[in-house]
Figure 1 (tube, rainbow, N blue to C red):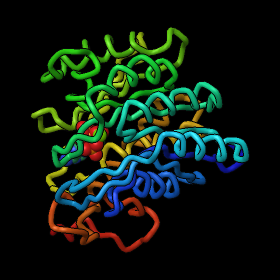
Figure 2 (spheres, rainbow, N blue to C red):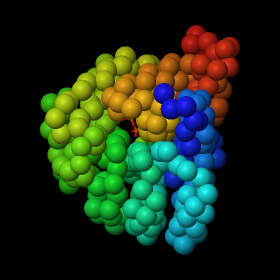
Figure 3 (cartoon, helix red, strand yellow):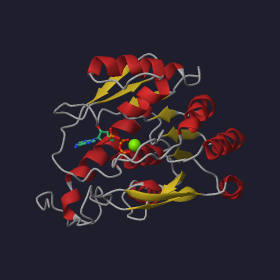
Length: 281
Ligand SMILES: Nc1ncnc2c1ncn2[C@@H]1O[C@H](COP(=O)(O)OP(=O)(O)OP(=O)(O)O)[C@@H](O)[C@H]1O
Ligand SMILES: [Mg+2]
């Protein structure tokens, strides 16, 4: 374990309902022992039922936020989430090249759980060409894997393994770079994710929890990984612990009562001491 509290940053959008985006990321990072900073790339008007509007932050101001933060704070791990536009994607890629955080978690967010588009189509090429090669780990869901690879998303575990191999080839040739392909969208009883580094293919199964409170599961998982990577030298170990944290956060989500749609997960299930898995809504 690192002796110093790791500094982490979420570079993403804001969901005012706090279940996804930078607000959720800050909660997950904080719950897992990291200091959390935030750089805002887009404002959204959003609740647990859907996205009603997106207001991109001017690209120069995204750049300024990153430069100002990184010039002062020694960042141990950065997590990138919703970027919104091609211009912001390019600017964030340039800034990451410039500041080169030791760990970079890229969640290639494209579509919200509600089905709303969070990344313009013309930004996909920049994401693939400028950001994937910089990442320590990428965390696409199945539809995002399909878009990045230019074909339909994987639908079986076997197709997931093939897609993970192809995605790994879009990243840097350097060692210790990983793909976490999330199987949340797989029509299976388990929520199986695959972790692949170009050599090992590690299955990370978790029992699928029967709940509609899955708003921000992807944001929470990638932020948990960013918080844990500086604390556990071994990437699979950090990812396993992050997935365990997320699964428990989904399990205890019924202790919260937030909104009428897909509610948030319980980021502080391990800290508040009064969460009960029985209080499903
Ligand atoms: N009902 C569930 N029970 C347990 N784990 C789940 C469930 N749904 C998703 N997961 C897990 O949550 C993580 C996020 O997966 P998912 O495929 O839903 O990501 P995502 O689509 O990017 O999420 P988001 O919509 O929040 O961006 C994965 O580790 C997945 O296995
Ligand atoms: Mg996602």
